[in-house]
Image (cartoon, rainbow, N blue to C red):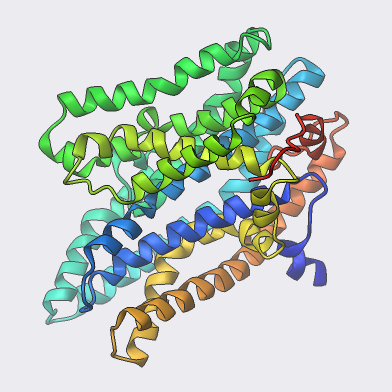
Length: 421
């Protein structure tokens, strides 16, 4: 029982602590952005700068993508180097045990609640305007849950607003092993970076084509561009490219790190430039190059976090980030539902909607979301993670977990022992 309750706090031998910090930063940024979108419906003084700044926290999904590309590729690459093939069966079993239980439990809960709401509202003789609008929305969207079930909601629309990113990741997991074994791993180590760089720029080209050929709504809202795999996989490839550079192009990395201060300033410039851009002011930039600036910035942060001596690595390696990172998947699944309910509950306790009260209510909502997500993680994810770990122990190969980059790989990488960032 004790091990079950403290699993989220336990350190894994194979993981890099600073990457836990990056996971935690990503999920907290996304929660904050979605809560801020809820806040704008309340009667508080508006601040255009803050609205733009916090709305653009949606770029933190790119950090999720960068980490996914780095970690998944690391596991597959490590196995391939040792065995000269990819174990598809083991990879997909591990991915399924890691992803499906929590995901389909979440979808099942959403469907049950949705049908219950429809039954309750349909049975009422007189509906208010709000209740009528809610009923119409439920009736229009409930059937879209099928798209969520099969991870195609990023193209076909879904019942769950934020599931589009999970669809991108699942499509990435399904295709990557075959893509690597049939194409990328056919190249020599020294030549592999070239096709990866070409592939990185393909989504940008496709975004530009969509913007030129698309409608005005597409340019202003960018829903298709924002949620489509073929226009967003460049963030995933940033993680892959960083891993390749570290393992097979150490000389290039050393040359870059001679200008580490400029690299850090570039990261700051890119990161904050995308946080203050309004979609209506710069629609073309917002829906095209902005994604490259954000994923490059996060890629630079990842580079510094891989150096155990750097300030960023030590900062993001702080122990309190570990449990947040461990339950981040449950947090992402449930944060909108839990956060909205909790924020509304706290708002009823006090009617003062000053900026200060919004801040402390948001803090309470985020903290409560993390707590309830830990409970859900313990009840739903943990049992299947234990099964996954037990299965991995029985495998007679030297394959490491695909969830975390093996620590030995980090130790073999170039030592970044100059002025820390």
